[in-house]
Image 1 (cartoon, rainbow, N blue to C red):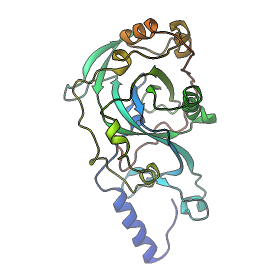
Image 2: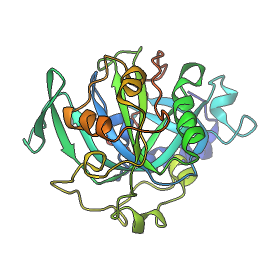
Image 3: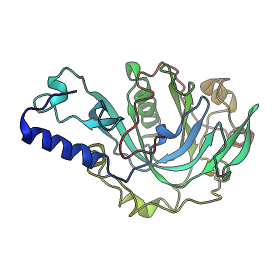
Image 4: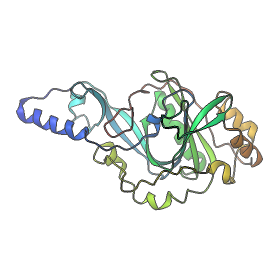
Length: 287
């Protein structure tokens, strides 16, 4: 950790550290996916992601980890101490639902059969931050880039982000799959213009979405099954793109098979992720 000299530097650092630990958080998609096979279905809300350099820092005084914005090597104490920043991309998304491996303690998530396993469905409707490093050889960012190159937009359909790797596994990776074209959720439309600036969020200047957050819906219908997609790859092609280890709910596969047409809009890559557990930040919902 960078050193500080003199009372003023120490007081300034403690003030910043205290501010970083204050209440308030912005829920994050990747931090909700804790176990192998868990996934979230989300709608990316804008075509303006950001990419920001950040440092992962463990503070012994607070006994917790932080992501710290890097202002550039010339101005950054962490860079001067030899800690290299990593590039993080970020999107605003509305979460349709999250599939968990274990039930919640309040018993609110309903059990759903997914392939040969039982999972627990958290209905959402919340605005969340989708932030992560690019991954080794940019594998994770490249999947989002492929979606944009095929569709010329991020916002024309739901996206499924799925974890591959148990909790604590440093070899965890993710797959990203575009689920086909469907209308923007009507409840998302009035919120898009109110979303905070993503760079301000990454700097830690914005720590809450209380003013714009929608109330969670107890029973949100899945748009991927209730809305007829405009175009999908034939089911054979989708199966090849997704792979046997990716588990779809049966009704989703049937919908895709029934309305299949057009070109493939999915890609699956499995490469080791180099920062799987580095997402605990002051304003996230990490346990």
